Image (tube, rainbow, N blue to C red; front, side, top):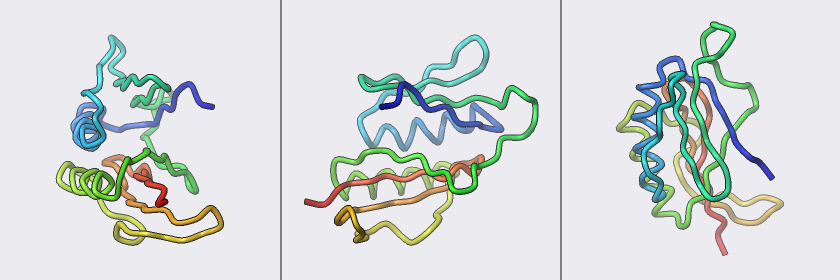
Length: 126
C-alpha cells in the first residue's frame, strides 16, 4: 500500500543510531545517508526515511500518528523495544505485551524516538 514513509528528525545522525539499532533487531541493515543528509532504509516492500524538516522548523511528532514496524515474534518486539531504550528512545503507552481488540490479539511495543515520533513493533498473535 505504501511506497515510503519519511519522518522528521531534529538530528539525523542521532536518529540513524537509534533506527539502525532497532531495525537491526528485525534483520534490516543500517540506513544510508544521501547527499542531502537524509537517511534511507530500503526493503523489498518500501522505504523508511529520516529527514530534517524542509521548512526549517523543528521536527515534531504528529498527534495521533504512529509508525508501526512488523515483528516476527514477541521476542523480536521485545528486542526492538530494548534496543530503542538503550539508543535514546523512551517508553510510551504500556510496557510491551499482548492487547486484545476488534482485530484480535496483538503483541505491541511502543516507543518515542529521539525526536518524539511515536513508533510501534507489532506482532499478530495467532
